[in-house]
Image (cartoon, rainbow, N blue to C red; front, side):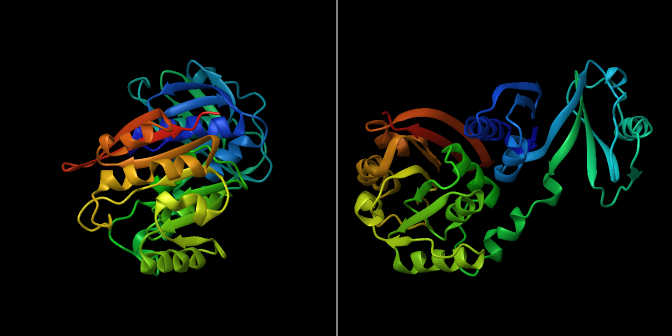
Length: 327
């Protein structure tokens, strides 16, 4: 599995969370941004379906110290195929993707080469070691950009890109069919990604107009009937009416975000007890903030598990934090 290069730490954390969801094990970094793990049958496809920061996901067919030592004796396909190569850090000097693709492609038994729309993609990763995989996901084919802010019927300029909203959802380790709450849901970006991974999203927003806009966005992307409540996060239990398995949120901060004239830290301080109350035992809160101190009020009822800094530009660093509620 290869995560996207712009956010190595966050991609690594998201992959670890997804492995926990599918009960995978043995996560190993074979090169910067590239990982191996043991997963149950069908789980590589599940990671591919859910992941926000995956670049490539494949099933490993062979592993060796070099491309020349890969076991290709049983390499056979039915239908059309293409061989693609990714050169990782640590690869021998002079390693070229086209050379690898030609050499491996010449050894494939059966099938027919189709570089435009193949039924099967065999991808070779080459770093300090070489790995031959049968690809199940290629980020070039994803649809995250189609859900970017500018494509929503209702939007505000401050909103996470869908790939980061998806990663935030996955950091909660929420499973299919479990409830995930965004208590500061804004235009609904986190809720959309939660619904698309199979969770049951529920939102809260203090502004009636924004809550209505979130409902409109959810419906636009085919997520019908998602409850979005008008109110304050401190009242989450009363508004939602049931416990949730995870909470993922990008809480309000900055000049263009509503903080009910309280200040960003004060909003979280007011909400901390209510969020802990609505969260199931063992459940997780994942949030991103520009300053970790903003989230300190959560550290009474919850325990911090993870902190990752993501530099956005010279004046903004997002801090992705994960908290867990004890049993």
